[in-house]
Length: 216
Ligand SMILES: [Zn+2]
Image 1: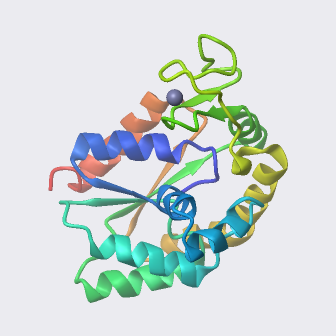
Image 2: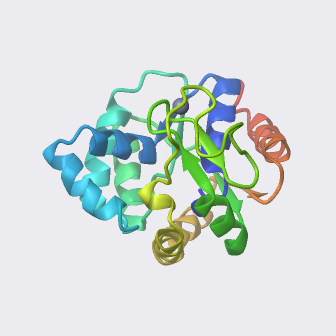
């Protein structure tokens, strides 16, 4: 868990590669649904393009379907649950399957850094590769290194949208972290999202290994 731009997606990819888990990103799943242009996708676009949180019942339905299809040895949830209502719905789903959360990772990050990180992102609409105007520039400005397509700024990476997402995070998602911290026996791992990706990974992987989660 952590605000948008804290680096959750990057860590999720690294951790799932290391431990052989499946990465379930609500952002990826919802964006795929939106891109498919279904009735649900069109409904989603209205929320996602303006930085509003997608309503709980829609997210829970989409994520429950993805959870049900899972048969990996472990599952890493990225961007879900995002509200206390979603967290309660997840608990109910897991209980039904006889499973439980092993750990919750919380990535803290400074808001000014987040705005710089996200609003500088540029994406390739063709292959999905992500660049940054300051830290990860393509060889030729505005053009994808791999496929030559013209880079774009995703609607939900625009600065005013980022600020709305941060506000929504504070209001709706920070209470989820408090909800998990209050649970006896559930390990909450705090890391500084301002560190380098490798430093953050090292901390997360060591804490998970100490719990015995990584070796299962
Ligand atoms: Zn490309």
